[in-house]
Amino acid sequence: MNVEETIKTSKEIPLKPRTLIHMELVHTRINEIMTGALKPFEVSMQQFNVLRILRGQQGKPANLSTINERMVTKMSNTTRLVDKLIAKGYVHRCVCPSNRRKVEIVITDSGLEALSQMDSALEKAHDILLKNFNTEELKQLNQLLDKF
Image 1 (cartoon, rainbow, N blue to C red):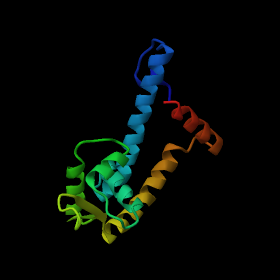
Image 2: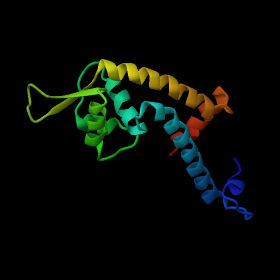
Image 3: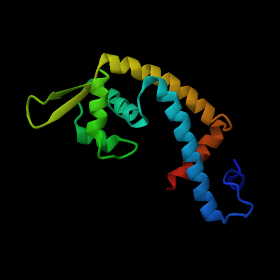
């Protein structure tokens, strides 16, 4: 993707701003593809992330702060995300028996099944997004991104 062509400028953009513009364009493309892959499931990327976090708990409940800490995109509306997943039947919320002020969230069997289907859809999205990279290039790209 040539940045200048994409943003329709004939001027050469200096390296640092060009790099950041390029990264923003890549971010947008990733979001479009990933969001599109999840659209049939009527789940946002953030909701998908919550489901993955809960699956990673391996049956153990998580509280809102644990979920928020592990989110890829930190946000203050974790409660709303969980509420939407409860409405879909993907997660269950209950009060902690040992501390009644603490709310615990677990993924349901329905949530696990849906998440498995979402994983397959996202795997295809990953293939589309990364089709021009070989394994060595992906490792190198990750090393460069780790510098952030």
